[in-house]
Length: 420
Image (cartoon, rainbow, N blue to C red; front, side, top):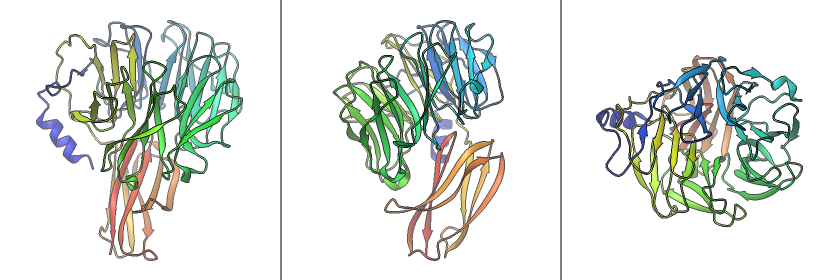
């Protein structure tokens, strides 16, 4: 589904960005997957982690990066409480802790009971408190430490959600968590706590089956924005916005046709970005959007430093200073992580979903009718790299259009199926 994007990337490979964008790539090594998260403690010093199982560190604002750690596990999230103390969460049951700015990392997940299966999101409102949540493919849980990760409390969140992905905490006790509701037919969910995770208030549901509210972000504590990682059956491309501190939410339509989103980020109440395979920009608080950055892949995290320097994580790390930008070499075209093919298509009923997994990953394959109903869950499990053929049968269903949707640690791909 991204062939036309790749073609455009090659065509524009000699260009930094178009004339209306000032995002540039930093000097971090290219990855076969993507950088899932970034964290900076100031304009210069930061960390990037990703699906190539590596943690990178920069001390000069991204001009140069050094590899600090490679635990051979899919790394999803990173957060530092001080300039020395930091945490990195994997999707493979490991939570790493450093006390020396990343020179050494120790897996402390065994100190959490029960041990989570992964850590999609980390949030830290102060130098003593750290929260974690997971996991995008279920179950839903939250962990909290108030002593810099020495001891932990585990919260089962299944009463509210089937999956959690991201969090924002404004104080030690008050914060938001986002993901998919329980049941998932209620769509994406936004939750809020004011007592450190003991109790939660449901603020918003999207009511579109299997929506995942993927990221939540606020530039100023009053205006909040959230991205929706939806399925193609949703029929459009949406984000959420709040103007009252995250209490009430409204849906903003990016496009009347479907495009997958994960990243969301605003520098103020008006200017922001969203996207996945490429980036859209708004200058009016989300009323209108313009496609500005075509040659990227897997955009996931926006990080704002001191209100004037911003970073985007994708197949590389992008930077914008809102002042001047130093030219850098062109970005190589993106590569697909996995390939999904339906054979035959159109089909009289019996068909095969052939998937080539470029790497081991957690994968969820589901089939949807054109009106948004999930009609089959074909698998929902950890898959090894290689080819996997999954037969399915639409003989009992009427002729029409259906969707096969594959979610993995690396994102979402889908194919349209025509039943004769």
